[in-house]
Image (cartoon, rainbow, N blue to C red; front, side, top):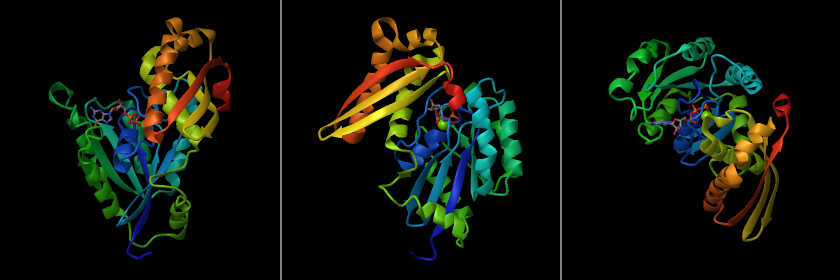
Length: 296
Ligand SMILES: Nc1nc2c(ncn2[C@@H]2O[C@H](COP(=O)(O)OP(=O)(O)OP(=O)(O)O)[C@@H](O)[C@H]2O)c(=O)[nH]1
Ligand SMILES: [Mg+2]
């Protein structure tokens, strides 16, 4: 490997729903992280490697920084972030300029100030931030705290390459041993290299569809557990549970005549079939476990 290549670890942070996961997917040109219109979609760090002729970047997509933390998941999620930020080269901070700034942003800024990494401010959702929805002025005073800034639309894939260019421009050519080892450990499979297991990945995909079809009805009271993935040649058989906290929620997830669960299952299955180019059988059950959040 040429000495001129650059290696670095990059964390993507910001308040919930700013488009962090959408940006990572756009950079990698593959869905590595699920996205949804609901805040708190990402619950755990998602790592994936980007590589081109300039070098390799290990991206870490993080759960959104929450202001008021009301549930157990939010509490656990909030504790993780400062640890993640302790060993990174570049911090990509995503703000949604189609929404006014709020107190959650101040929490993000506090984390930014503590970090010794290089920093890029990403103004996202420029496609949506027009007329009365243009809140750019709320955010642009932050530029002084950053090494670089860029305006993008992660959804429309505008300005995404610019983000990668700026990351490479901020990475030093000389790399520390630790960073390179960390990135090389991701060299196992096809690009982009994701650190989640097939079970975790499929579970996330099902959770995405559940968020999509349930909307605000049972916000964060669900998790998905994939119990089995069997590759039977032309067909993949998957057994999974959607776990929720009460019988009332279970009823909502199933829906009238099983309509909701069917929709969730159908859409998850279709996406998996597209990805794998195989037929997928997806057995979905809804279960109640009052305590799942405690074990998260
Ligand atoms: N119009 C528009 N919508 C966007 C853009 N980027 C993301 N979105 C939408 O914003 C919503 C949130 O996107 P996510 O990528 O899930 O946001 P996130 O920051 O990862 O959210 P958490 O994981 O909950 O912290 C989704 O509905 C996306 O489709 C953009 O550039 N323009
Ligand atoms: Mg996310």
